[in-house]
Length: 142
Image (cartoon, rainbow, N blue to C red; front, side, top):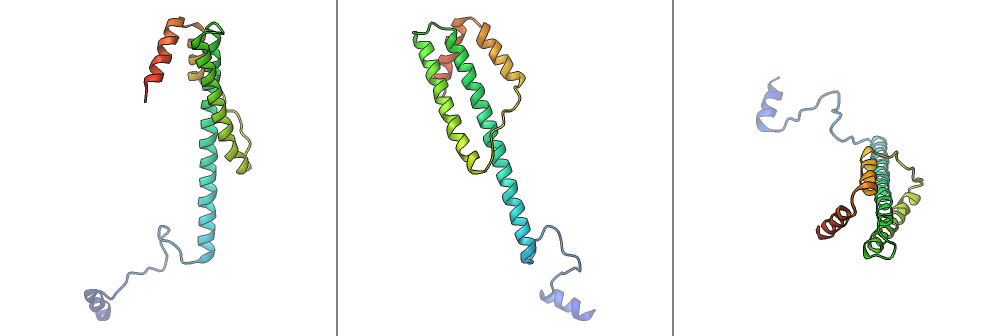
């Protein structure tokens, strides 16, 4: 008892318990390998989910741009700019599908959201002057 008290006063004593904490890293090689594999799997799963979400939103944007382009005469500047925006979005989708193939993942379309249906209704039935104004404000954003 006196030795422990003396050692703690000097600063030589270390607190060690019989049961190791779950939060402190283990010195066991096998446990470290398992933890590293789990972290890698979780990171890959999160990356796949993030890419799938990005593809989903970009595809919805391409659909909206294509729908908006049909609201204008085919030779107009508005229609051509909306078609070029749609092509640019689809090129972005192709670039995003590349990493999924390397991760041995196939893109699965997500179900349509209510937000998408609302945007589609707005694109179909809103007056054209509102659509032109909306496009100009999006171009001004940095």
